[in-house]
Image 1: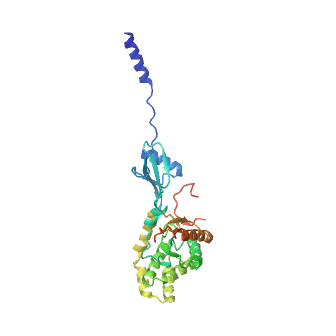
Image 2 (image 1 turned 180 degrees about the horizontal axis):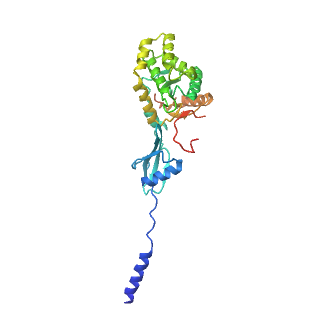
Image 3 (image 1 turned 120 degrees about the vertical axis):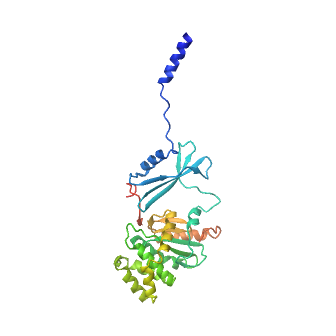
Amino acid sequence: MKVLLALLLTAAVFAQTPAPAKKPSFLDKATMEAYIRHLYVWPKQITVVISDPQPSPIEGLLSVTVAGSMGAARQAQQFFVSKNGERVIQGTVLEAANNPFKKDLDLLKTDLQPGYGTPGASVVVVVFSDFQCPYCKQEAKMIRDNLNAAFSKEVRVYFKDFPLEQIHNWAKSASIAGRCVFRQDTAKFWDYHDWIFANQELTTAENLRSKLEGFGVEKKLDVPDLLKCFDTKATEAEVMKNWAEGRALEVNSTPTIFVNGRRLSGSVSWDQLKQIVEFEIDYQKTAKNAGENCGCELKLPSPLNP
């Protein structure tokens, strides 16, 4: 009887003991989303998509991608989560055997793009730009005035259209026009590039076509063909292909420059760019793995992005 009573008392004690609280886990998408919203100060207007956990290059960790978007603005970040879900690392995996910029180099495509400088140069500079962006105008002048003069044989420069339509109402049309010029005469694209930036403050969505006509006359282009190309948006797909490439590279501001895959976002001074190019020239003598104040941007709304 005493044994039975003891068992009953023990059972009563266990029945009154609350079950241990379930630990929060980053493998639970709701927990991860709440944590990331708090981390980045993302309001409910931002859509958050969290990928399913995948094996990562780091043993013992899983890879999870968190993407936030609102309209055309998008930000994605890779996280590495412990298999028990209790810890998370935010960062980039680097491999000793590969160029640290290999991931972006693999996505950058320069074939059939406007370019100047020495083909096969050891340093490749790719510029994602918006013709209506004032910061792009400043950066373009800096590059055009200095880069080729300082490194006539060592550098190749490519231009990529990345019009920010939500804040610039004629940027995409200007990119379409530039591509129309490029179709007629590849060399004269750079005349157009310099001309449209020089006339940026005088250009509007309403007068762009007439200005393009004047440019065509001045440069002795086939003006009827140029205007037909512009009016029918014959080169829009080429512009949007560049846009898609930029999005894949997580470009969200202009100008964004890649020097042998090294990302330089926002305003870069000539002294900064010159030092990076000089370093790459020296580095590529043995490596040979180049591959062929912030400006205009689309940020997700957050107090961390003033």
